[in-house]
Length: 225
Ligand code: DX5
Ligand code: ZN
Image 1 (cartoon, rainbow, N blue to C red):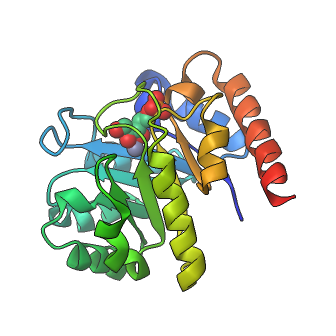
Image 2 (cartoon, rainbow, N blue to C red):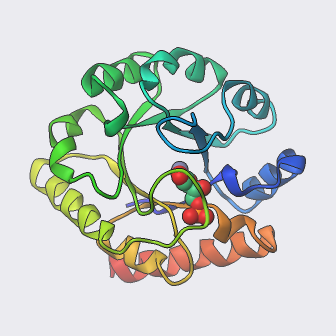
């Protein structure tokens, strides 16, 4: 099982993105989590297609685009054209999630499905053979710096069991409130892709990267023992 830290660009210093990407790459980070918000599905607006296109020239990281956008199907080809490697959509935001996920794969990138804290796993069960990743939100989507909701860990465990029973190979990502005191619980529940915004970008980025990479490695060893 690969356990990866996925720094969330939402918490970065937008004045010096290139410099920070180089620090992520030097620290061995593989994923960059990119939160696109539309001010409709969630109450905030973040950034979108031109920004992704521009940072693509600055980085070889795997662009993991988390779309908090209503009817994301409208933008998929543009998001792929801008440089995404994977696109995650919210089941609550799609009129036809099957068509949306199929289209993501047809465009040649990985597909993810996400659920908000109040959405049960049962809602996405029929979609699990169409995805490379399931993103379990551990806060209400829309902003960084919120508190981890421990109840959501139960959904991670449920997904992990389902994957085992049915032979699914999807990654399980958690997003929101991942920090020193919550990351162990998320990983123990079964999450292997760990999004972290404020924990990574607040304070000293290089030190935080070292700290969280070591912590993830330590917990992964315990889990695999
Ligand atoms: C929130 C976003 C997150 C956010 C996480 O809606 O999806 O990716 O950046 O921020 P932290 O890690 O600070 O909770
Ligand atoms: Zn996110």
